[in-house]
Length: 131
Image (cartoon, rainbow, N blue to C red):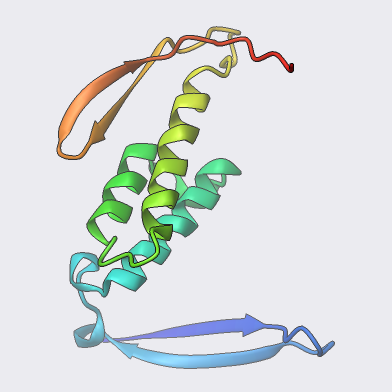
């Protein structure tokens, strides 16, 4: 069985979009966990972007799933950029827990699995002042 993938993009210096069409055989599709670290890490970055903008394309993705994918695909991380991204997602999860929901209620805790163990992090609003 074949699947036809169509991708359209527009180069920055061009007014006309380009179409790429590629047939994919079922036996060419591999499991997500068997993809390269770079692919899986990039997927976590895309997932985070969709989560932040509350996109309907990323319906069931959670902060914890993004952290898990990114952590599992961190690789050598020579300059620490991937670890920095993972910390950014953790910080965003904590901030999100303190944003009022539709009913005006704030979440008081969020559960994150940090380095293999699950713990609940209490969210306590802090007043920041400029000196």
